[in-house]
Image 1 (tube, helix red, strand yellow):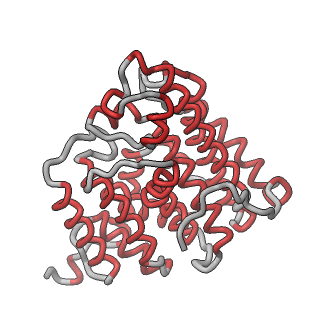
Image 2 (cartoon, helix red, strand yellow; image 1 turned 45 degrees about the horizontal axis):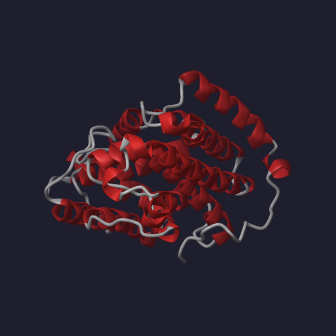
Length: 317
């Protein structure tokens, strides 16, 4: 065990986390700059842990170069052990997991949320596939919806405020649905798919030939379906912003617009959606940041408290 004085400082770990979000997601990095200083640093810390788990599980480098890994269960065991050490307040020796240690202690982050997130990696390690839309939404909760819940806690939302956490979860679900729509081809390249078997059967698409040219028109319909679902959860999430302070609401609404654009663009491109990776340009990001500022200022009028659509999938309690 290294001497306490030799351990990396909080400042150093925050700097590493800032670098991680800058390399891993230009969209989230842009939105994170809108937070007040304390929330911004904690958002970076949380992102660093999420990014490291994803990279370890998928053999990636900051979300790039996903590959088939030969030891998924061993990788799951490693990230689980490091996460549990961080939650126990131990120095882990990996900046991303020490980032979790810091943010969990500073925000009293419920440990059940981090474990729910790890359950998503367990599904991938088991080579799991969704059979139904409900299966798809459960997966989206574990890999992204619960991250929305954790981000809400980072922004000061009480872990007992289920109504606001539901809306935060909705934004994570929207992001993951957009991700799945965009990455159908990339996922298929490493032997994965997250389109429910029931959907594929409905469209007559074999699970082992999702990207075949003869199925592109049917696949485009599923891209539209994912885009529509993402839009519904994104819209629901906006009604959680009155519970946030102005800077946090601004960041959330900017992220919703920037990242939501991915799902909308996949739907717009139809069968050509997977010819090249869908991204959001710098100009588009700036436009959403400016629009989100006005939305945040008017959030208590635009997004007054209302009943969440009962047709939307609801996170487990």
